[in-house]
Length: 97
Image 1 (cartoon, rainbow, N blue to C red):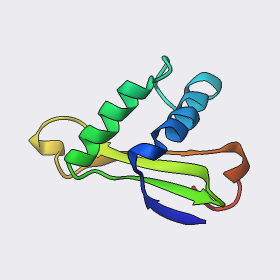
Image 2: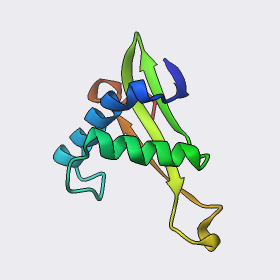
Image 3: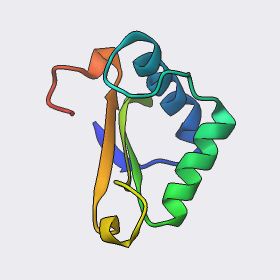
């Protein structure tokens, strides 16, 4: 398993995992599936602010991702982050999360 910074080439696979979580689970507060332009804007904005998104891959397949952003807007929250970790079904239960 390799963990690395996400690139825009990873966004379609990240989108697929995120939308599975939105549609099929209760692990996110999102209720509407994301689109690729929305995801691209969100992750690019996070990256520009110095907040990373990482992917874990094995044999060229995305096993999951972790994304970080400021917890809430405002200077008092500047040093805080919230994170999202989403794993592909086959990657769950192996200590990756």
